[in-house]
Each structure stands twice: as C-alpha cells, then as structure tokens.
Image 1 (cartoon, rainbow, N blue to C red):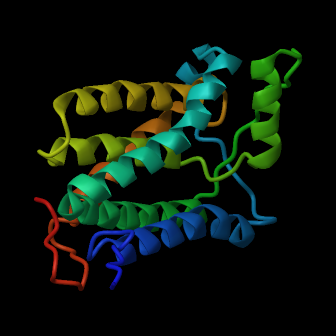
Image 2: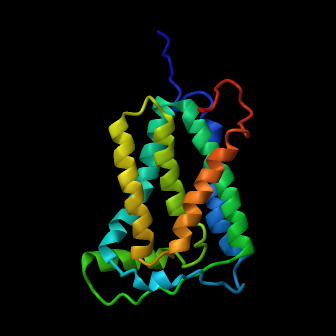
Length: 215
C-alpha cells in the first residue's frame, strides 16, 4: 500500500518564506555587526518625551512574534498567492530597512527598570536580549502592518480576522514606544516601509510562475 506524502507547504510558498526570513535576519542582525563601533543617533521628537513608560505593554510587544507566525501560516494555507505577495513585500521593505540601518544607525536611551513585578522582569529580559539599535524603521510595526494588509488582500480570510488583526497591529505599534524600544518616527517608518514594499510587489514577482501573487 503506497503512502501519499503531502507537502508541508503549498507549492510556490517555500522559497518566498525562506527568502523573507533570511532577509529579516540579515537586516536586523547583520547590520548590528556592520554598525558596531559606529556613531548612532536618536530620531527623537519632542512628543516622545510625553509618551509614558508602560511595562505591561511588553506583553503586546512579545506577542507580536506570535502574530507574525500565525498570520503568515494562515495566509500560506488559505491564500498562497497573497502570501507570495506579502513575502515579496516583506523582502523588499526589509532590504530598504537594511539600507536605512546602515546609512543612519539609530539608537535609544532606555529607562532604568526599578520595579520587580512580572512586567518589569519581562521588560528587563527583552532589554538584555535586544540591543537598543536599528530603530528606524521599526520592524515590529512593519511586519505587523504587513500581516493586517495581507488579510485585507485575501478574500479567503474572514473579515473578523482582518478587524482583530488591525486592532492588534495598532497595539503593537503603540507598544514599541510605550516600552521605550522605539521613537514615534520609527512607527511611521515601519508603516510607510510596509506600504512601499506592497506597492513594489505589484511589479516584482517571484521567479516561480506556478502560482501567481495576489493583487
């Protein structure tokens, strides 16, 4: 009796996923190596001083990673064509982010954590694991925004998924400044970068023609 082995990923989605992940890690971690020892600047607005430090929002900040995995997995399964376009948008926008990180290295002076509660301890762990560089554009905002826009482009995804994703994406954007990992311009940079990636993805396609990207 022959066993039929099903592919883990739909045809045409494996390469876009692998490339998008590789570019993400190169953009974020590779530039840290390139910029080591270089002077960094703070793109801080006066309004940033009015934003309070709210450690409980570190939960939203961390759950953003779950959002990315969940949304990408859902798009891969329900709308592979749209996933291919979102993966291309992610790749292109993070190449632009790579250029921004190298051309204008950015940093932030994070507050001292004085409390010993759960959220303060979790914030301390994130601070220890993530050096305060590569702020503009915010990759947190960029990726969460792409998740929501991907749901918008996929008719196979229920509308209430779309609405929930938008609410969570806005919370993610807020969390980046409320836990003092970013400044306000970084949010705008992340959103604009995602939209620019989506715009470019209308013309730039993956070489595999077996599956067309969503429009």
